[in-house]
Length: 217
Ligand SMILES: [Zn+2]
Image (cartoon, rainbow, N blue to C red; front, side, top):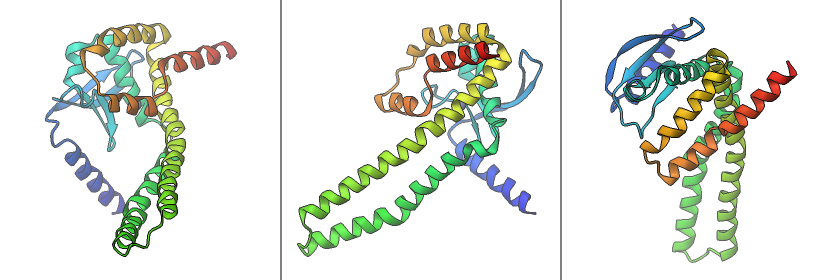
């Protein structure tokens, strides 16, 4: 019963997520290691997203199949499969960040806002309290970022290592060359570049960790 409700909720959230991302269909892709991956192909603006594991489904934009080699498709799909296979406990830090953000956004931020409005109206606010509040909010954002960044890097790193294990390091390096050649086709905004930096570990770090790990084996 509980599982049914959960699946219904996940399905609903997914259909909301895909509202402006029209379906092409349910498809299968066989990875070089023989694994069969089920995914949903969709039409989408490549500036929006290429591929994602969201609400228990792997979605891949048709852009990936039209513009990238089979090797790159393997890496992208294996990366998303890596997200699907990530142990649940690895998501806990990210869930904590989301909960903390939600608590602040829904409870504290409106309270602070109301407090500021009332104090301004009654001319009771001192510059000290104002500075204290602004500093508090800034500090809070820094704390959230300090939890979010390593948590997200760990999850994305895990998926990327999964992809390397599937395709092999040489094929992965070929994918990186292709990715570097093609990444400028789509102009990214500065905000998007910051989001990428905060969410994804640099590829050079991935390669460095991989070389250290394979040496120690
Ligand atoms: Zn990812």
